[in-house]
Length: 67
Ligand SMILES: [Zn+2]
Image (cartoon, rainbow, N blue to C red; front, side, top):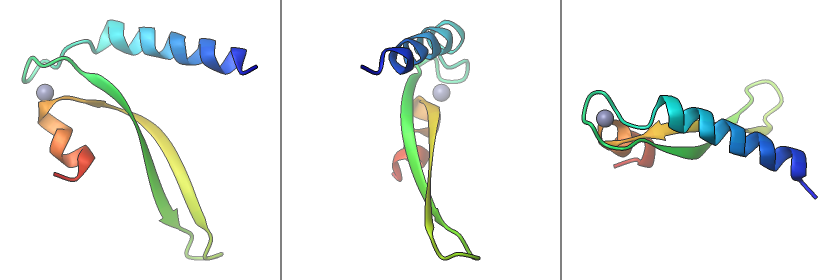
């Protein structure tokens, strides 16, 4: 059904794993985490949701997951 999307995710995952498999700072394996942030538009008052992939390790774990 969502074949194209899935292959895109696989490709993205492979790329990120190849390039960011380990954090150069703490040496921990980096995990791609999908982060959804919401922001309210000051003009329309409507909520917008942004999805981004963040590579998480010890260094930014607390930051990403809010402690
Ligand atoms: Zn790190």
